[in-house]
Amino acid sequence: MRGEELIPDVFREGIPGWEELEPQIREWLEAGLDLEAIRERLFDHIMLHLEDEDAEDADLKAMEVAFEATSGLIANLPVSEENLERLLDYIRGYHDWWAYQRLLSDFLPLMTEEQMRDALDRAGRVFIPEVVREWERNVRKEQARRRRRA
Image: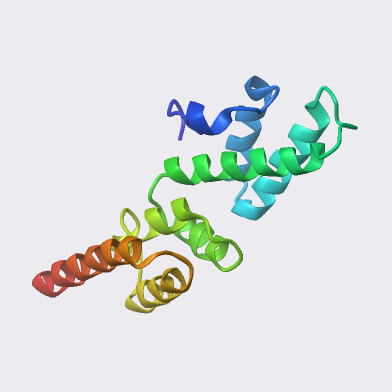
């Protein structure tokens, strides 16, 4: 991820001290931290840099910004086995549209049939049918591609 935008601008809104945080996130990724651990560290960073951390609901605002930043990170994760595992682990605890979108589109070539079925099953319990239908089409295309190659 060197030289690439780590988290798009729109997801960085409200993150104080971004310049010092970005290299830290890169280190966390290289160290193999999972997305939940990264989100928790984002939250800690935001709370540490808030101008009025004692304000009512400051922790809720910081958590919201940390979740948004994590979604932005997910949107830009390079396709790799390590990031596949990060995303599969993340959807076990969180219903993040970006995580499902990346898994059920960009990461499909790396996924096993079982992983695809599990991700679609989880998505079907969380998201509206129109969204899930698009992901089902993506999975069918990937399965057809695999059959042609076999």
